[in-house]
Structure formats: C-alpha cells, structure tokens
Image (cartoon, rainbow, N blue to C red; front, side, top):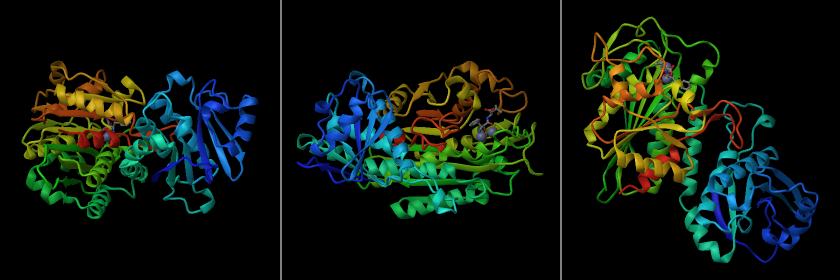
Length: 490
Ligand code: BES
Ligand code: ZN
Ligand code: ZN
C-alpha cells in the first residue's frame, strides 16, 4: 500500500474517495470540510444518517468524490483502537465499492489527539480493512478490490508530524499483508518446502542472509522434534534461518521463532473432521516472523535480528510418530509422545534450543499452539508468557503500541511438573485439558536458556468469522509487535 501525506489545499481535494471521521455531536464547523463538500455532508447530518455512532458508515456524493463518513462515537472516548476499527470498517465498505485510492481528511480526526497516533492507527485500520486475497480466483468479476493507496490530507501545522509518522508505516503494513497472504495460502500450495522458498525469495529481495535446513541437516543437528513431526508426511520438514545484521555495532541480538505447521491434521491422534481445514493456518507464527523480518530488513534497526521458522506438516502416514514413542529433541532432551496433536511444541523445542547459539538478549516465539488458549482468552488477545520481567514489559509495551492485544499468562512450576514423563525427560501432552496453554508454555520453557517470551496466537492468527473491519482468514497478528520491539530495542 502506498502511503502519502499532502497539505489541505484551498479548494476541495480532487480524490476518488475521502474518509471523514464523525464523532457524536459533530457539526459542519467541527469537521472543517472544504466548501464543495459541505452540502452533501450537511444533508447526511441533518437527516441524522451520520450521527457519529461508532463504526457506522454513511456514504455521500460530492462533486467528483465519494465521502465516507464514519462514526467515531463520543469524541472524548476516541482512542487509537477506535480510530483503527472505524477506519477498517470504512475500508471494507470502500472495498465493496471497488475503491483503490482513498484520501483521509485529517482535520476531522486529529483534534485532541497526537497527529502521529492518528496517522498510524488510521493507516493500520485502512490496511486491515482494505486487504484482499485473490490468488485462487480465476474470474475477474469475483476478485475483491485491494486498497492500493492512502493519502492523508493534513493542515499545514500538522504536515511535518504527519509525514514523519507515515514514513516507514507502509513497510510494516505491507509486511502484515505478506504474513496474511502466507496464512491464506492453501496447504497444498504452502508446504514446508514452499514456505522456505518464500523466505528465500523475500531474503533475496531485501538483502537478508537465509539458510534452509532440510532433513539431512536436521539429522546432523539432532533435531528430533522437527524430524519426528515430519515423519508422517510426504512433505519434508525445514528449519529456516534468516539474519538481519546492522552495518554498525549492534545493540544486541533478538531471535524471533515461529511455529510453521503448514497443515496440522493431528497425526495419528487425528483431529475431528469439522473445521480441520482451518489447520492450514497453523503456520501463522512462522508467517508473522517472516513478515517481521521483511520489515526489519527495510527499517534497519540497530539490533541484530534472527528469524527461525520451524516448518513441518503433521500427517498420519505409515511412518508417523505414534503415541508412546520417544524422541530426542535438539540439545538431547527426550520426550515421550503422549499425543501426536501436540506437535507445535516439538518443532519449537528444536528451534528454541537452536536459538541459544547466538547468545540472544531475548527470544520471542509465536505459535498457534493450543486450543486451550482460545478457550481461556477468546479470539482477540494472544496469551503472553515470559520468563523475564523486563522482556515481558517491553513486549507488552510494543503490543500496546501496535494495537495487538496480549494478556499475561503464568509459567508456574506446577505446570512443569505436569509435563514430566515416567519414561523420558518430558511428555509432550499433560493428559489433562485444564490449563492446556500453560502446560504447553511450561514445556517450551525447558528448552530456553535466555530471556524468553512466548505468544500463543491460536485464537488470533486467523479470523474464522468476519469481524468488524477484518476479512476472514490470516490476520498477520504479531508482525507489528515484533517490528516495534526490534526498532525500539536498546
Ligand atoms: N494447532 C493446534 C492448536 C490450535 C487449535 C490452533 C485450534 C488454532 C486453533 C495444536 O497443534 C494442537 O492441536 N494442540 C492441542 C494440544 C493437546 C493435544 C495437548 C490442543 O490444543 O488441543
Ligand atoms: Zn496439533
Ligand atoms: Zn498445531
């Protein structure tokens, strides 16, 4: 998406579509509209169509432009997430009218509020709502319109701040859409091998080092988690390693790890048929890491960033892991397999052990790890587990700035106890459903030896149902948080 900032001129802006925010009680005066736009908007206000009710969109037509009046609720309660959601809803409506270019009337949005926050949250919302995935539509009349360009129209006094805020935003928003595209790709198109291809292509374009480890390398490393999970599938597993290194002295090293199950059938502990198609989204953690690496490569922060994608397909083939089997994960810990559907933690165990070689200052993993996390928290926050207070605070702050909700979950010793096996060092499933997100996190912790945080994104990696301003499918959740963490790391 192209993002620009232009000064509000004397006349009416010549744009195909214009977004105007209307709070409750707003009048023509408070909206500070161009003269040519006042008449149709006056009509919408007088008819009480545009009342300012939150997320309500009213479209009016002025000379040469459509005006999308979007409700913001009471002006006093307008926060970043109100602007984000209202913009997303308006963008979805504009999408239905095949709008590719949209201008934003900042004078209607900015008062009381930092211009930078307004620009960031509106751009984010528009990107969220204006997204389309058409790769598998062969009929052009069925294609959904992708929003291609957004221009903020800013008063002279806010021009500099708006421009500064917009710089770099498009890079991150494009990375979010890249992650959404990856999530939406079907399981027979995105396999561990083609996910690695996508990583390599991205790395080539943006100048990152990228190394792909196939089965032979994994064997040599002793990556029994990835190899074990991959055994039941005709598609071989991959461990993908990406590196961004700043030109001058780095302020430290971050490692981002993503669960990349390109399909999770459950394996021999087969999942029920209902909604099993959704398990193509079991690679959304890896997609978020890949998206974040794409943005990091362009934003060039003063910190070294490593991205690790643990990619496999979990299938019940003749050579698949069976309940009762024991594997040896990278680093040497043995794991009794009590449920082959608890496969994410097995591939992550290898990647988390592998991450130690960089002596990282922080490691953050993202994984669609447990259904239990969605039962605990629902479908908008991710569960945040952290072994280090400072990293927790930094990550929670980045998530807040990014508009991605996280909620802290505990890493108590009792959960670790529940993951002990009679036979091996650990078992991969506790055998009780209670606290499933916490026992999974406790399992992962055993493979970490550095400040570590884990985001369980099972509930947020993809949207099952249409939500306000969000199409069904991959959400790109996590990209913005990771990028913020890297860019502000010191
Ligand atoms: N990929 C699933 C978790 C998941 C469920 C993600 C629903 C998104 C939506 C994961 O591999 C899994 O199957 N976890 C099991 C663990 C259990 C067997 C201990 C679960 O959550 O039931
Ligand atoms: Zn599973
Ligand atoms: Zn899974």
